[in-house]
Length: 244
Image 1 (cartoon, rainbow, N blue to C red):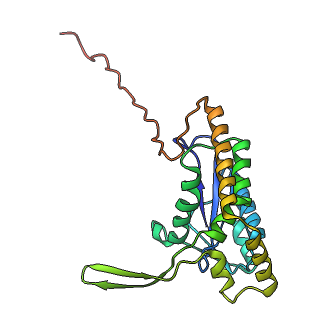
Image 2 (cartoon, rainbow, N blue to C red):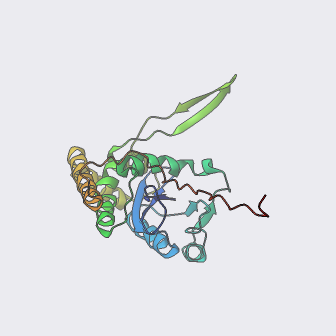
């Protein structure tokens, strides 16, 4: 799990953050948006995500942010008998699984804008709870690395056959039959084209709300915002000493 910030070009004040989670074996992904990044809100988001997953949790793995490394989450994992691990400091590749999802499932969807209103938060969670999670988990195939071999100065990687998280979960042999039936019923009820149209419609609504907040009609969510720079000018000090 990891936190994706939606602060735009400034980290001042409160803004929306996305708790992004993925199950390593199947690639099943879930997200939840919260206002701010307090330990309580992030913990609440994690419990909401757990309610939506169809498999049992064995543990959680995070980075070293204080929103994760705290007594609230630690005691929860002890009560629920979940293994709690974290990445090594300054080793970003330890979280490679979730970092990939942060880009494909969050940044490519919502861009780099600053979302800091309750209306924006509502629209984002509507997508996370419904169309976005269904579209990504049931219809977006993922590849998994099968092996890699160093040949001279190059590394040759081999990947398995791309499958959706839903397919990998159904073939895992680790979920109960009633859960399989429930997932299959959901899959058969979905129309990927309609899901995509609904996602686009809600994103258009989100960008409209953002544009009204900013007083602009043109919104480019995928342009990285550069933080504003402040230049400090040193005033010339008066000369010190006796006049010559």
